Image 1 (cartoon, rainbow, N blue to C red):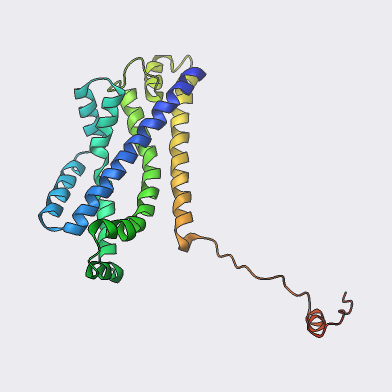
Image 2: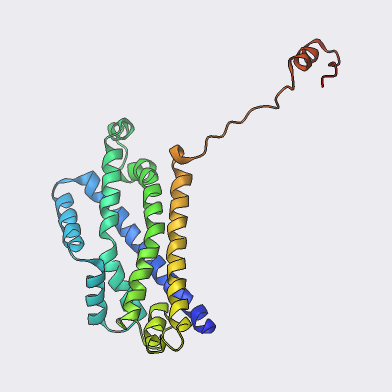
Length: 239
């Protein structure tokens, strides 16, 4: 059982990370284009985003994975197809806020290129929000992947996966409950770990949430020591 868990971890962590990374990249590209060019391009991108967000992620991933057949590549594709729309909305809102700033207007007045404005002004301002959301979202993708594995949809029967491990031993739940509990608890621990990691990144990037630390020079012990240091005489002994 330990060997199966060790073999399953690269799949259960790697696929969600790939899903979130590709979805975030698509969201940054499409959200930036929609925010900067507006007009018909914005309408097409946002209506397409709304169409995908109208369906529950789990149901749509389940339908796509069942249609494509059992394969880790197909499972990853089924997750990416439904995972990018929230990133488009997040990036578009952030870029719209940045585009209204004066320094962006100055860059446009100086005939700066679109790629220069995006690289220097837009991306650095929206990237922290995307990073925090993506870190937490890895846990959600892992839960979806484990659910697909539990339902035996998309995951090949020979591939080690935590959700499939739970599904394969449910008939032993009353005789050997640890076979079900250990993989399930491990999924919960990994999801909680990514959630805590995302919260930590958010606190580290948000200045308002940082603890107030005041740095000061070495304090003088008392008034007589301060006067003695100024006059060049040795300070008197103070109890």
